[in-house]
Length: 227
Image 1 (cartoon, one colour):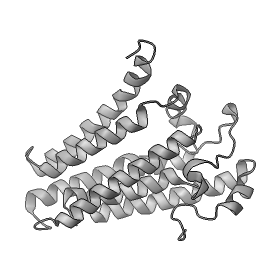
Image 2 (spheres, helix red, strand yellow; image 1 turned 90 degrees about the vertical axis):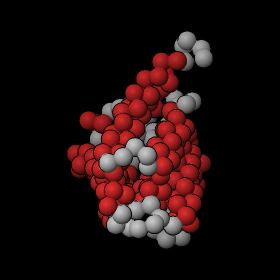
Image 3 (cartoon, helix red, strand yellow; image 1 turned 135 degrees about the vertical axis):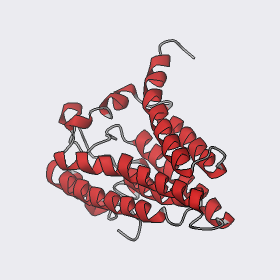
Image 4 (cartoon, one colour; image 1 turned 180 degrees about the vertical axis):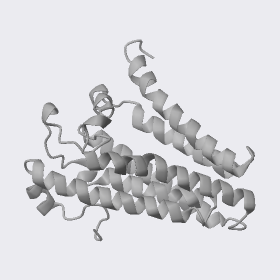
């Protein structure tokens, strides 16, 4: 690895490792054991997908995604729910389910579906991130960066592919962990993602030049042929 590119990769690894540590702590502490294969599968997928978001990413986008304080005030609350509180509730519920066996024996088909959904969700987010140099972690009209409408990549099909990937990924988590009880916090988190999508879409209509015309061409916000 070239010395000049190493910091661009190593620096974003810190939040990824921190996220994985929180995930592992929630899963294994609530389950009361380390020998939980489903949890290790989820951690492995999370690490692989996290790397796919980091490797080759524009350093300018990495800097932009760190500007959480610059986002809309209402979005700061929603970010906390969709990125931290909702997933944590899902992990802890699944861990308790594993400990007390509330859901019984997990379905192999559900596990396989969860893996497929997680890969699809991560691939959608990665594609959106590679296609959109304004892919911020918060809702922010980036006038300082010459913010314009992005209509290439997955944005040709839906207006918010990043949220679509998040939506699919959070619903995949209970299936991977074999917990039907964890579907409740996961579904609640998915509902907040829908709310955040609607609010961001409204903000872009109001504040981003050209977005209304783009929205007329690309009809669906999150789910093709649905919404």
